Length: 182
Image 1 (cartoon, rainbow, N blue to C red):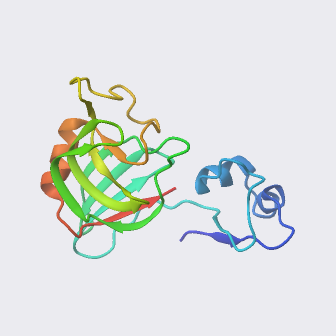
Image 2 (cartoon, one colour):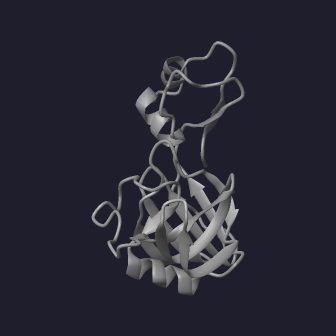
């Protein structure tokens, strides 16, 4: 069971951490807070982190932004466990509940002039769709970010090793739930 706390007027992270026997650093990590002084009334903070528990019978993809890791489940069966890279500042990957909304074997990102093999689109960030895909390939054929998996490096997407991205692409389907959390 995950414990949460809702920020009240006058609260500081230092006070909240002291009240719940944790640290500002831990609360910041669990909630993806870059600047601990920028909290707001009504903000719900995670105080504990439980391991992802799959629910239901179908397929589910879970991405943990703190651990830079992805798990894929079918029912309660773990199918895949992959190291990923998510969005780096200022293009952080959004946390939330999404579904795969598009599947393209090799998508082209015109904003960055690069190819994103095994594209699974999951949400819109303005006019740009963010998704899960293999290490991107520049127009000169060079693979981007190879060797950086496990570190946030992307423009908001969830990036996988090429072989693992192909496995996930072939396993998942339009409508597969994607849960992105800290």
